[in-house]
Amino acid sequence: MQEKIYEIINNDKMLHDIQSIVELVDSLVVYGYHRNSSDIHIDPMEEGLIIRYRIDGVLTYVDTLSDTSHEELIARIKVLAGLRTDIHFVPQDGRFHFSQSICDCDIRVSIIPTHYGENAVLRILRNENDIPNLGKLGFSDHDVERIVNRLSYHQGMVLVTGPTGSGKTSTLYTLISSLSTEKNSIITLEDPIEYAIAGVRQIQIHSRHGITFANGLRSIVRQDPDIIMVGEIRDTETAQIATNVSLTGHLLLSTLHTNSALGAIPRLIDMGIDPYLVASTLSLVIAQRLVRKVCENCKGAGCGCNACGNLGFKGRTVVAETLVVDEELRKYIMSRTPIEEIARYAKSKGMRTMYEDGIDKVERGITTEEEINRTLHE
Image: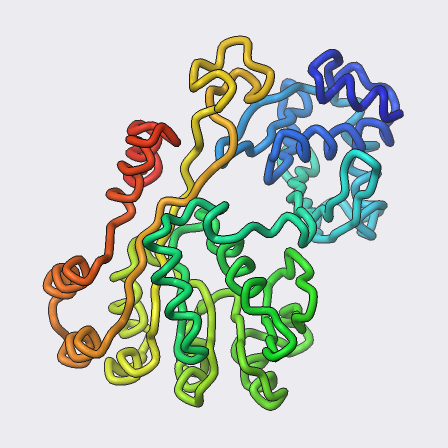
């Protein structure tokens, strides 16, 4: 079977040529894994079953399968993920481990009913050995130094901000992995747990069982942690508890949906956190996006390049900005200084914007200016 899967990877065979459903699912996963895809989209449409992969953040069409394979394919995925095969009109979520000599990963499954039948999206989750360091994620030496310096304080709140799909979770995992030592007690609250990290106690959010970010945060403080990671600050209650936890000498890491590092300040205040508490607890904000990297093999030409699948890009890198909250900045926050003035101060203290970081990567040939503009201004 592996020889047949290699034919798919090497583009010597199309997915629609595969007759065995077991082989088809295996090929779908292995192909996505080897193309560094984050998600596999299986979309039933009028013209057939459309297969697309999110490669380096961009959905890429791969093949169209016959309608006749739809039900069997979804049923096979449900069996692997431990889902109900007799239910077709209710969304279902599951997970399974996929292991072969050429591919080892976890797959998170989401299935929803649509007009043309059940739609499936498979998220490929790579194992802990694939967690890189900050430099490999694409952070500049300048930003790495600022981040490492703030983490060494082991107290306060560190936030990673950006929209969905900007790599916030990967950065959080990298930070937690770097902090995981025998001397640190680390507990995380996640929804979902995407990677298992050695030495870290990871808790899955289960709202139906009363484990929410807010309730879970209250409970884990009694577990004597040094470092706490909350997957996301989604509401006022979680924000208030996270702020209070940060005041008690813990290092708390989390994510927030804002467009910039400076945007975290008014966002927390809008969530009902007193400016004094924001100033007292906030230590560092990392804002980021992911941009595609120019293919090193074809240098962006793409045509006829098997390495990047003719896309001209292969892999992604971070463009980021880091806001370090010092004593002077705390005074600005408490006095509700306009954000424009805070920005001028932050830049005078060494903060480079995401755009400036991106242009630096353009000048070094890592990405393109079009890619920076597409990502930062879309």
